[in-house]
Image 1 (cartoon, rainbow, N blue to C red):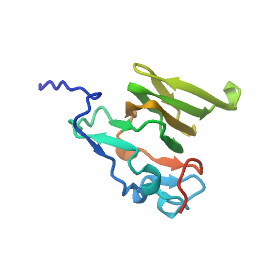
Image 2 (cartoon, helix red, strand yellow):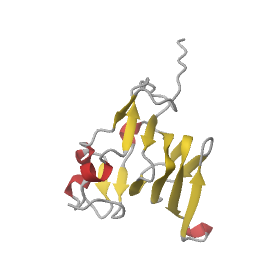
Image 3 (spheres, rainbow, N blue to C red):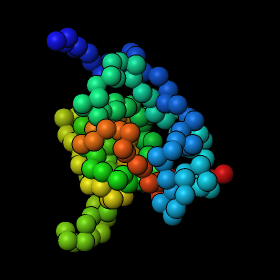
Image 4 (tube, rainbow, N blue to C red):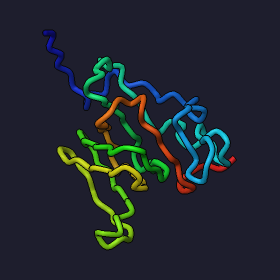
Length: 160
């Protein structure tokens, strides 16, 4: 067995996120259709806001996605077809989410900092705003990312 040790909070090995994701086949507009058909501009919204790591990513049993986000950037409101867990490694997120009706309903906001995690239940819309230092975190899902669907809502976008 090979052991790999690395530091995801280091400032090395990060590349700007691919901005051609508007046509990603598992990105949907919440009102129906693909995100590419929505009246929003993925490239303009995310330009210079997020980075991905070049560190080992061939870990199919872990279903994870490390990301880094610039200070104060708000990831547009969205939800997924499966539960998602975020582990914050550095910086912080302020996450606004819709609470389930059986828990009182309404909108809640939580701060998620280093060592904290946030669990988003499938179908729960949420918005994430990075803190003043930005945020470095890992997203992970219970099933392979090839089964993940993201439904984007009409909040936080640059419009076309």
